[in-house]
Image (cartoon, rainbow, N blue to C red; front, side, top):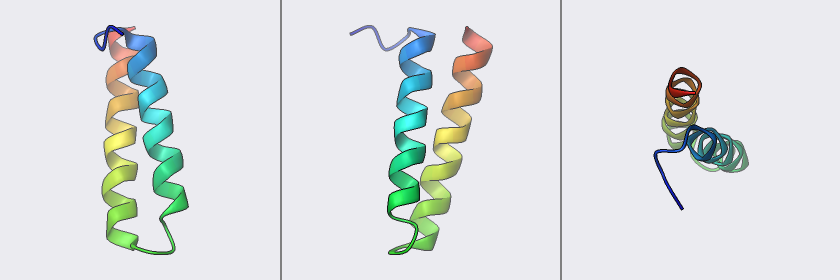
Length: 49
C-alpha cells in the first residue's frame, strides 16, 4: 500500500478517530491525543488531495 496516497491518509485518520472514541471512557487524555492526531491526519489528507 502506498502511504502517501491521500485517500489512505484520510481512511487512517477516520480509523484513529473511531478508535479514540472507543477508548474515551478508559483514558480521557489518550482519547484527546488520538482524536487530535486523527484530526491532523484528516486535514493533511484533504490538503494533499
